[in-house]
Image (tube, rainbow, N blue to C red; front, side, top):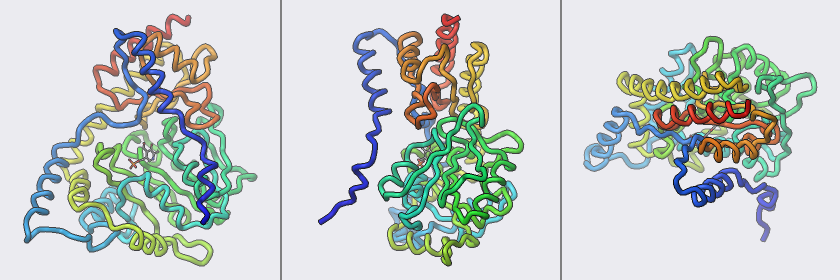
Length: 397
Ligand code: PLP
């Protein structure tokens, strides 16, 4: 028998294990050091009250014969949730048919599963640096991967030019790790390019809820022409703290066809064959996010994280350190000061400020020399961390 040898081509990801080891070693050597972690992208606030209430109510329904729900009538998701998402998009001028909305157990699964729709003999274009999952999903399938460098020069928002060639393009906006966010006019250039080149854009909108500035896109479908070239993947993880509850959604437009086949129909077929839907109670919880109370509570949580981002940004401003993100994103992407490399800065910050972040190099070669801090921490600890970072940076002169 033969196994999928492409798994041998995967590079080991040492990023978070190396960080964990370094922090553990440091703590062992300095037992009194009060270390603050601003490294991991997980949320820290609990689920909103309305969401928890929906979980309780739905659990009770599952315990009564009259209201029990078994297999989900449609693997695509309950109409009540798909309609709530439809209204959420309509609220910003994007018209979707509920047949275009597919409920998932999170963005990560669908970012990988969507590749079932595409031949292995396609070229994939991935930004560097970026969420590492895109690369590994394609390495496993043996696809050719090319990279588009993101840097301070292109504001960490790579754009296509006359030489850009690819069948599948990943765009992540607001970006993890850089926090950089495409404007609608920039996305229009990508959409026109994809339509002209018969390519498909996989648009990861997991952080759309953080976008607050005018002119920036929260969905690629805010751009004319996107429905004939783009699939959008989104998540309840960051908007509503579902990282441990698991729910997301994917939009595959009915107008999206390639190579003589309709991708919406293909995805429906794929999902009905390989997926049995998301738990009823979780879908009820996700729908509660869009209720009036849910939205209000969730905005309070997002504002909490936004304030954390502002506190970190203010410290970097005062220290004169270059960064992007933080405004429309929970991530702050800074240039390591004094010419330090990513890991060098990691060690220096841990030792000088007892603060942990993520070396940019872990997200791609172009991340070398940069560093990611997250706003998902506790507010008081973030203030303390920002004060320590500022004091440490000042010692560099
Ligand atoms: N997409 C990006 C860019 C992410 O950063 C993450 C998680 O950190 C995900 C997707 C995964 O989202 P989910 O929790 O819905 O699987």
